[in-house]
Each structure stands twice: as structure tokens, then as C-alpha cells.
Image 1: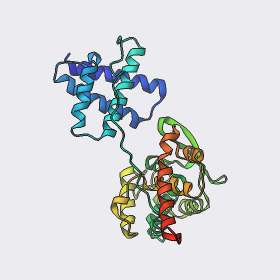
Image 2 (image 1 turned 90 degrees about the vertical axis):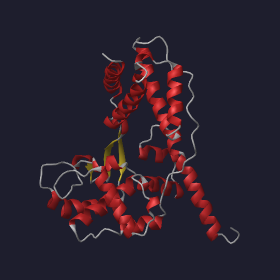
Image 3 (image 1 turned 135 degrees about the vertical axis):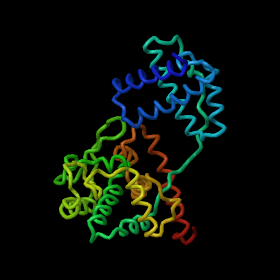
Image 4 (image 1 turned 60 degrees about the vertical axis):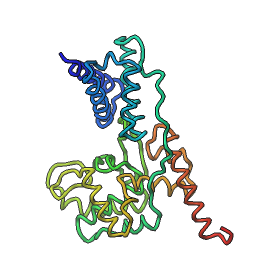
Length: 299
């Protein structure tokens, strides 16, 4: 067995182990597998396997990554390596953790792209709700903006996860963690209308997904992303402001602008750590500064 093949076997065992222990989402597991495989390939060219990599090898790999990868990518790779070697140490497969004294690259301050409330209104008004597809799209955008769901959570919503009487949805987020999120009156009204007038025309197959394609199957993240880009053009929104998370960012920023508590926003977004949510306070603060400069007589 080659060094690379040996590494692949060890990586598969690791992925199975963390899945059994923590029940991580498929995307998280595949991200671990991908980052570890690339490291294993790099080691394989030196006839070394992942199990016997030392601190110097890991530092050299991260240095090489820095020449063509962003700091965020390097931090993600180091996090995957730390998780891998921590598990190996716990299971007594290695004597020491080679990542212990390796510092991650400095994080650059990045603020999420967001939209103003008037831009959101323009985006919401873009679909032609006289058509089945326009009605579906309006309901999707309303739900996304009202709840701050991740796109993967939105397209993965099932009929039984919506309680129309209480106006809440049950979301299974990252790490299979469950949370309840209120819909709000506008999103609830559009969702009711879509379920009554739009979805029945699309439901050609026994699929429990709420938002369906013309073929009666659940919508993909990429398909919804293309829909959002098309409506953004119609709404006159610059393309650089649009990303798969744009409405999620707008949801959080607008809540904070209107006085919501940061802890509440954290719960609604499904963030495990409040430090992830705090980035939105900077966005909200910048927006308030802009409003002050425009509207205050001494701004």
C-alpha cells in the first residue's frame, strides 16, 4: 500500500469516527475529507503518510497554501488538521498532536455584503406572482428574508417542518442542530398562497419538499442562486452585492438596526458561537453612521 493509499484509509476512518461521535452534516464531513485528501496528496509526493506527518510538514504545507490561498482557507485547513490529529491522539494512534503549536494566519476583517431595506423591497417585488413560478419565487424570497435561513436550509424545507397555525418553521441546521424560527405575517401569507395556488401545480411527484421545480422535485441551492441573481438584475441591484447569503445578512443587519438583541439574532441564525454573529453589529453600526450623515443637520 502506498503512502497516499494509507492516508486515504486513515482519513475514511476519521470521517466515520466524527460522524458517529458528533453527527456532523454531510457538507462538513466532505469538507474535512477534501482538505485532508489534499494534504495527503502533498505528503504522498514525499512518500509520507498523514499518520506520520510532523509539525514541520504541516507548517511547510500551510506555507505553500499561503502562496495561492486566502487566510480563511488556510484557517479552515488547519482546523481540519487539528480535528484529525486530536481524534488520532484520543484514540492512541499517535503519541503527540503535531498541530499543537501551529498558529493560524491572522484573520482579515471582512464585513458581509448586505442590502438596504429599499433594495430588499425591490427584490421582493420582482417576481410576477400571477405565474406559478413567480408565486413560488416570491414565497421563497419572503421566507428567506423573514427567517435568515441558509439557502441549503430553505431548499431543504419539508411540508411537515412548517407549523402554519403557530407561524414557525423547524429548521435542521449545521451539525443536525434543530431550531424554531418565526415566519412573520408577510412571509406566512405568501407561503400560504403558494401552498394553496402554486405548489399543487408543481407537485407531480410524491416529494415532501415545499419549494419545487417545474419537474416536481426539490430545488437545488444552485438553482435558487440563479433565480436570485435574475431578480436582482430586475430590481437594479449591483451584482457584487448579491451572494447566496445576501438575504441572510440583510435579515440579521436589519433586525439589529431595529433594536433586536444580539443573542436573539444568534439563536435565529443558528450560530453556535455569538462571535460569529457579532460581525453584524459592525455592519449595523456603519449603516447607522451613514443614515446620521445623510439625515442629521450636522452630520
